[in-house]
Length: 114
Length: 110
Image 1: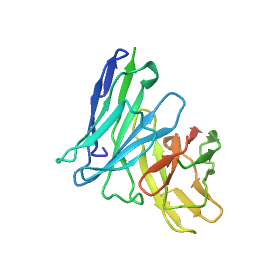
Image 2: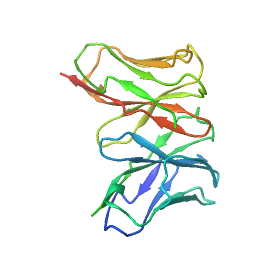
Image 3: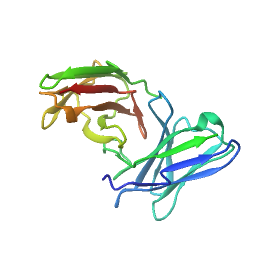
Image 4: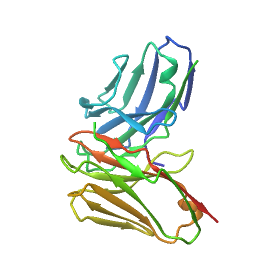
């Protein structure tokens, strides 16, 4: 058990809808990363937060947004969903904002857009 | 975006065999190199983080080396066991993010 909690585990929704994925980092970790894994693709970096502030952005679409709250949990909001957004979304946390710290991954949220 | 390449894409070995895979990356702007083990239906688990050229890390039968000047890292598994079957991911860090390769899928045949 990595200590990182992601909810929900599975989500099925229709095109055009909006969903929120939630992540609670490991106790004491200040940094949260979001990754997307689509079919036959590797883990694609979306965004990173450290202690409530956005630190880095990757291939995150404008329809997607995220935030990290004062209690350090993070939410990834996906709107105007398209079929191609179907993927496994991982949250990971680390103790520092330095990328020399290992990431601890949650079990992921599997999103299916129909 | 940093380009991380892993080879081979997949590998089948017999139980007891030793094996290794490669992670290649652009040698400039290097911060750190991570290895993760990802079992089916589970989440990726960190194996090693290496930051210095010439770093060697070991955890049980698994070890890794790093060459930042030529831009590669090797992961070695000695005496492979069926429980080693997993996808092994390499990730390269930029200043504030971590870019993953597509992994090497290892299957150890009993």
